[in-house]
Length: 297
Image (cartoon, rainbow, N blue to C red; front, top):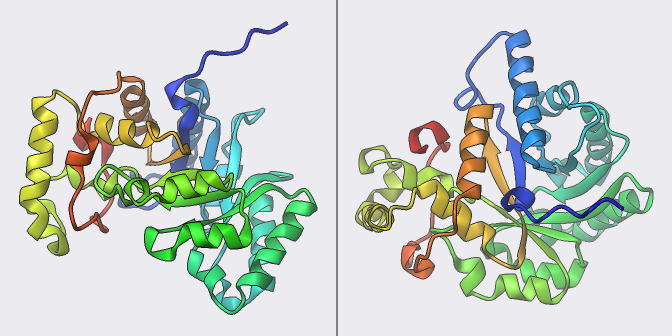
């Protein structure tokens, strides 16, 4: 009998590989492929079992060419927008598996909850159910923000998973009761945007214009973390991973070096912090450009 493995902090981590040039270092095709293989092998060696993908550019194809063999990953796929019709969504979801070199996927997520709320929402959901019934995807769900009313949509469509923006600076999903509501209807929650678009990793001068008015609050939060001798990355990961309703924490990573920093932060002892005092109130985090792990490590 093989003994069961002790739980690890990385059990909740999901790797979202970033391919954009502003995060990934430009390199010839061969070097890029080797870098991606190193990133995926580092994830596998670290015990990360989930990889989240998007149907953008050549990212799926590059991943399909770089998986370790045998691949240890459960892969989630996102749909294209429903604007071109449900036939296009279904065809692209099938095509994603082909590009990834997989016979089936673990999870298919509707990219935007607004697609479900529209006129074709029920027809779209029925297509996902059909793909699940055929065994192409083990689970189905949708991506949402608090403004989308994810708990109401979950009660209507009964997804397996809701991927929800949730982070240290924007704790509305927790304090509004949305996480508890989703748990009550047996829906798994995957937390995204866990690094709050890097707002804790940059100085006031690097904040986007719409966030300048929050510079004093962000400075106060960084100061509190410094006084507690807690790295911002450690704090952001510890908050998201400590939410009992969250089963996966999606971290965007562009390199093996970034991944090693994230894994190290995940393994750090959970800090004793007043989490509620570290959120932006009443505002919440908005887009602030890409997180660069190296600047915060």
